[in-house]
Image (cartoon, rainbow, N blue to C red; front, side, top):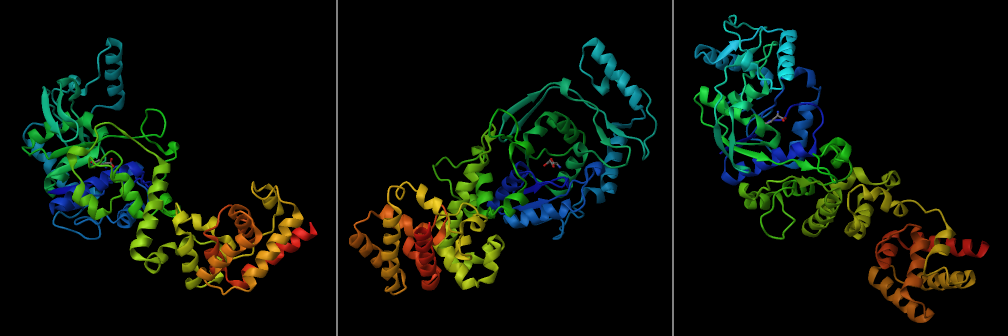
Length: 479
Ligand code: GLU
């Protein structure tokens, strides 16, 4: 089995495109075949500098290594369409020799009058109805057209099933443009054939042109590869295809936001595919095992960003629980708040170890850990508004916090002793955990959330913790 991902380097990798890389990758790995990366850069108007590198980086980041293509080379070099012009011309000449392709010197004005004629007559415009009787000899600078053989065509799509199309969708498509470069329609057929591609996975938008492709395979006496059309990814609302405006980010943006490649790969692979069980978390190796074409859904799958966040949280916990903090920590380096720069890795690892089960993305670290690195600003309103504390008078609050501070002052600073001391404080003060612990928690962090209290205290350290508790006592007294 040989599969391929054939992106056009237009600068932005929509996450829908990535699924067209994941599925062929999984198929190739499952079958022990090869996965090719081919850069379809013949549309020079759409070409964006650096876009190829972006594609390569994205695939590497997701762990979708290719066996043939840019950087790694391979038996069918080159893997950039813009460097394969001679190959396309050679194949074009075969079609000319067979009488199945002809030069087209019709001006665009002329084509417009053909179109207008069809509009007036209310019939569909097909170029082949205006095919010139004696076209000029083909030379570069003139578009080259295919001579269609319109008839009823049947084919099998591995996802969509048995397909049939009539002659009305088959036309004299352009093979080579006036700039000498091939169209997608022609180039991909030549490339897939010369590269030995056996399975084509691509978006369902190519389904309507498939009858034209079948005619070309037939004329060139090529076997038709297995065709696998992937349904659209739908926007979170409405019944339309997911677009940039629907909040779908590029892969790089997800990475910058602290989404793990494991999670994005998992999410996208399961968007429109499942193995028939309730399982949702798959590693790359598990996907390679479980993937099957016949469980790709035929209808569009709805994009859901909250699901990505959920899955990412699952992956953060899974990786840390399985591999440990030391192994995971390097992935967090770029996501800490600026103030963390003054602290060493040992301290940050301790913070990570008590907070990771609340993270949805790595960039949550930026917001959720600031009080581990800087003293929070005292904001008594947070205490006054707290639903457990607002009923307690200021005097009682300051006394309660003072009692807690004194108790902690005399406690050995390790998690177990701190836990015991906090429990003892509940008994001594007769307060509910929600009251006592909320108060200490706020005084330590002034944040909406903090990890288990004894762990927060342990990691902050004795001096810092006590200083913050004292500071709040004083602030309440002075209020
Ligand atoms: N270059 C096409 C695209 O980016 C590829 C379609 C295909 O996979 O054949 O949509």
